[in-house]
Image (cartoon, rainbow, N blue to C red; front, side, top):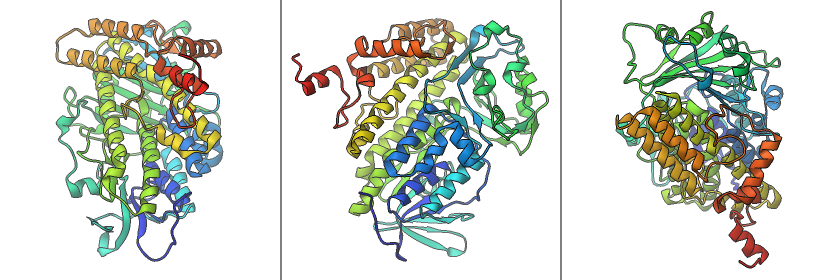
Length: 560
């Protein structure tokens, strides 16, 4: 049963700082389930935001939130067609992740390109035009009863034993029973409590420049490659990563589908600030084009491009927090930490945290118990997401040194992308069939919270091998090419890597699993995969336990 209380003139149940995607989605699901919510933001919708590229896991997490908490409006994000219909014709389609390695002064080598398209029949990832998608979700939250205070800059916070209080300009005060800070880097709670960790706690280094542009040429039109070297899906129909030694450009088009009326393209450059320090003697635009001119194909992509809004230029992007939950408060998602936009994990991580926080918070409101202990899993999850994303992106930047090492790191990432979605499917199926929320709570019972595949020991071992190999390259202890060959051998020999769709074949540059390959993968999972992976096809039982062979024998009374 949803928590419910009378909406009197007393304190709010929950105050949320930040009305972007994170704050608005959380506000909507809480308000839909009976909580009184104040949604506060220093800015005003509509507004510019990056983090526009969704993943299949993002969509599945939003579909789960829609079903679990009764907010069907979230379904609009889970397919491109629904985005167009419900939000507006301003988003782009995303049919793949595209990766292309560049070397200074040279045309890109076709043999150093990769494309990955995770299989899905029901869901289609998008490039969200965030000013529109964020406004849609913000209005959804208000529609479910959230009280909104836009243009409200928090000047002070009091985190008391019995209530929380925020103060704004002119001394305006609001009280609540719990405070969620979803505001991002300039988190008032992190500042108040001194929660930002020393930067040395993180391995990865990068700074970024980004904007929206007109007249960005599609990658497909700017290459000298033969047709046989091109991927099955045009490069322009996905999120493009143009990589070089310790850096990468992103190209995220909103104009790559006839149904979109948006001419814009999201453009950014992220690079290691130790190798490429932020210059004092040039503008962000000059800095961007200085690097674009180093790579012939990239230079052609942006030759005629024009910016439509001021550039944003950052210092080092990475930050984290010593704690993310406490008595009556939580730092959520980007308020807790951030690493790098590589692999588009920001929205995915956000939805995963909302899913784990919401049921605990509704139970805390009902019990009037807001102790940090009951939110301990949220702490472990967020710290795990930050740590593992830090490792993944750091290994990738090291891998950009040479294609063999990058190809190996890429395949470790790919090795989780299909299983994690199969895992999600199995739990959602059982939840929809039984309506038992305990099934989803059991989904959190994992040994590696925050790891891309959090319940597989074999994948955790492969991940650790990737980190150790890449860091040895970074320390100068081994050559990148030799390390890449070594890690590729580990990938091809690992039982944790799905067979049948090409991940284990280093020469397979484009991964676009079709019907026969998916059937082969399913046969391998059912018959030859390690026992800990078998439930990806067999599902979970009514108590949310993976149906491995041992569990199947127990439940069906089959002799061992």
